[in-house]
Length: 97
Image (cartoon, rainbow, N blue to C red; front, side):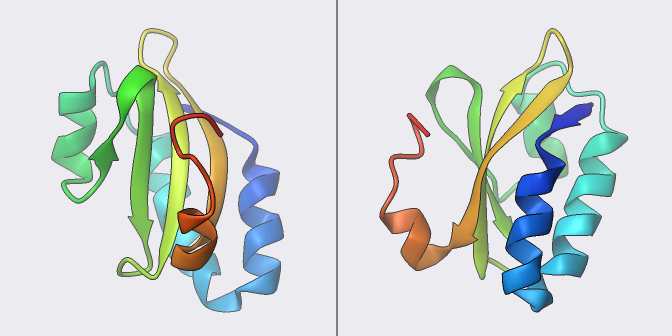
């Protein structure tokens, strides 16, 4: 999969150093994935929450952080839309961010 907006992850881990390794591990895993459907993605990330219109919420660092991505399965592109703490996540609308 091709990931868009890696800078979003870098900006986040500069403020939350403990998130760097889990985010890099997530990035590396997704980069080598070839998902064609949400069901295939769920086989890799069982704890991920599938939202409408290709949006997915991933639990990062043992569910300490949340990452919202929009996945375009036919084009194999993952757009990172948000990464933050649970408190920050509670303040957004994951479906529209």
